[in-house]
Length: 217
Ligand SMILES: N[C@@H](CCC(=O)N[C@@H](CS)C(=O)NCC(=O)O)C(=O)O
Image (tube, rainbow, N blue to C red; front, side, top):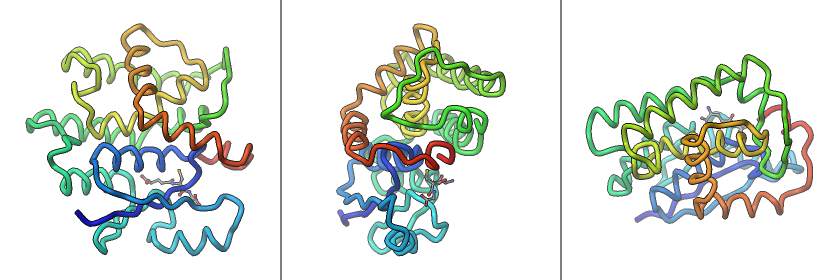
């Protein structure tokens, strides 16, 4: 199989980079990771030329550039169908795509109020009402899926949906969001994934604080 390259941004702050990287891991493809330096504007600009959107993540595979995380997920499901990024049955695939789409295009309040920050911990964090309704919707999706599939992941086995919601699990841990037992168990399953642990360990080695990323990502 052709070797792919995934261009990513900060491991600590960039939730889309985390999703793209987890998707590559779940797909089981060989890939190199290129990180944009957070403190070198010209190097960032040069690397971002790889991504027509100037956003990360961007995957290059066999001469093909794929950007935007949902497109990367679909591309990888095509390249590595045996990896099970999408459920086997058509109804399951439709649900999985809908749930991924909801994450990709929605939950703006949650993203703004609880930015991903893997190194941080905010016990007793006060979540305002706008973000609460996003949390209510996300946990409703999780409860429904876990009841239907029997868990431990949203569709039983790991799929692209779990990669899409993984940064939500880290946010729930960072901001001490209270969850019922079912959702807490799901969060913990995701946080215990070896790939997520590997990413988080690398995030801890990044520069201590990038203030602007705290609000933008
Ligand atoms: N819709 C895009 C969003 C990607 C995005 O917003 N990426 C952020 C990082 S999380 C980015 O590239 N920001 C500009 C930069 O890092 O210079 C996707 O799904 O991939």
